[in-house]
Picture 1 (cartoon, each protein chain N blue to C red):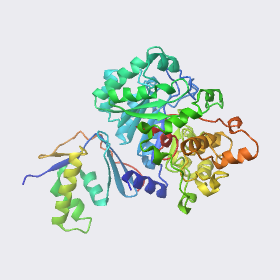
Picture 2 (spheres, rainbow over the protein chains, first blue to last red):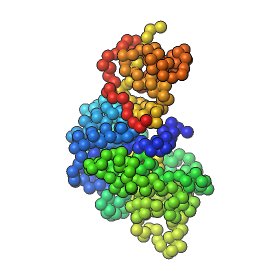
Picture 3 (tube, rainbow over the protein chains, first blue to last red):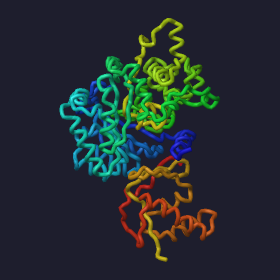
Length: 383
Length: 109
């Protein structure tokens, strides 16, 4: 049992929000084809508001703070915010596209004691990466940023979201990460846009691609083990909770809205009207999320994959029922093990095509997940 | 033997969780959970108090432990955290040390 696991269990028992993902802006200098955000500024929190929230978070026991966006460097007060957060002794992880990070910014990030920086890279080929970001020269700038950050001794993770357009390039990105001495993660999931628009789901990778990812030892390690049929779930599994969303972590938008997770857009309170701890402890929405155990899940509780599925309650919520299946994760479990999920069997019996369901077949989750357990972060395959 | 003065590094993250201190080195991501005794030493590591003073005033006075054992354990603990850059050791007091700030880590007790 790792210390991190112990820490999570203790936080869960005490009801402490161990990790928070804070988006400081939705503005961005890229326009990625798969992005789920609206990039207009609808009234971002001020520097003072963010500092007040950071103080509240430290008092609530938050330890792991992910600062993300949008593009974080679009905020002129970013370093002031990080400095304040570090003064409160948060462990700070930064998510950025790196385009605005030069030597001076990398040096400042290191001086401030940021623990790690995650940067999105879609391809090792500029024509592919720049087509996805819609920003000419972005791959060159991003790679330069990674070099600047690495030269400061900072830990960098390259996050590679997979779509049909860039699927064939993931090995190239992995090699690039190795060359740059950065960690590599790949994410084969996409989420609908924040306004409910599902059109971007057409960018998803196909079944055969997903299968290929799950059978690449460079990504999953022991393929036989990774793709093994799930064991029969025990009572502990059925009494377990689906993921850390709302239990030991949550998400805060640039407008002060609190959600269980960045991938779980269930509005649970606003920090411009209520204190963080009031929302964390008393929000009816968070209480409902916390009440759900695996045994309570409709369909999934009887699924052979219930103990091993990466089922994201946020994606299930976006399909209409936070206790229901997430068809994207049904597909992942199926492509991984070859065993159809209970949801797939149910729909087949009813003569429904899973692909034509209300929900998307494969949803690409945001790469920016704050949660250390089973939500979007868990769906990243690290190498 | 000369006195040791210890102070917290600026390159750490820390938070109290249920009476224990979580500490992570932002340099190498090493993670520690300190028990209440170790937490007391870490909190007293302001650069101006000697380790022997901390042991006497913060450990022996507040915990049921003999001075010899407390001193030995404290020595080992300080050495280990120093190896990860979490504590900085000096042979003289450091006033206005470069601790990231003077704020004690907050968090749920």
